[in-house]
Length: 351
Image 1: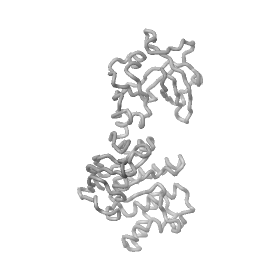
Image 2: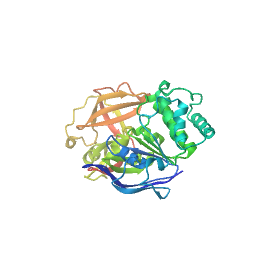
Image 3: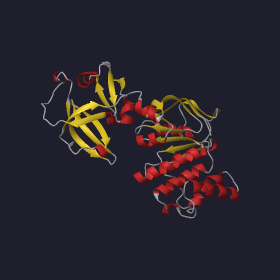
Image 4: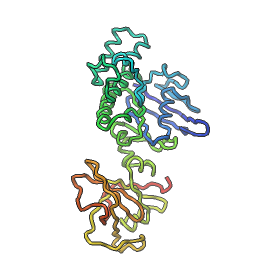
């Protein structure tokens, strides 16, 4: 197991700053994810850790040892690529054994370790199969086995599941998480998929425009976002101005430079059975503070139903369990909107 420390790390490509100066501590045995949209700098940061890119500034320490100048092959860091990077002319066994052969291990040791790691990734019995004859999920597990067999101190994942279909993604991420817990290897996992990061991570660093916006556990990021970007990216949150908070929901304790962050599942809607006149502005709300919205889209996704609502010239989203979905709530339905959450957060309007 290994602690990894990044101190004042930055990277630019020409005039483009891919990674702003940052400090990051990743704990021994931790499953740590770098999460953010495309182009935010997460893969560049991962490549710096792997030694495939050199930082413009800063240093990297692995178990208090400075590895900044070490080449990739001397860092004892494994990397699982998005495109698997397997040798198509080799069998499963030969692909997994390759790294051990480079390290000049004995044939007996190689065989023992390869068979053991193939059992862990549920590929025992596939040793002699040619790689092109495997499914995408099996190829990804071969890539994982090849990285694990050399017993790295840190294992890096660069969007490893993006080429798999939904069912295989769920299956393979469970395998990755289980193996990380069994081996205790420090993992750094790059993804743009919020649900994936929330499901498998001990902690997550949310990145945007080359900078870390917030670091925390999945629960901390989801329920206590540090700023507007994190709230929108992690929880797909709705934002309500001070004026709407006061007039529609009776919430007074919010400043003019703040917005209220409300998750889709914290919004309750119910159909208005009698048609009401459309309210054009906040100032014309009735004294009871009630305001209607209109459903403009309904999306069923299995366990959850999502409603998109036109609410005072902004679109808000509400979700509920499909088991509670009412057939009365359809596109065009006028609904009363209320907040059911008890932990609504405030963030700066500008963030």
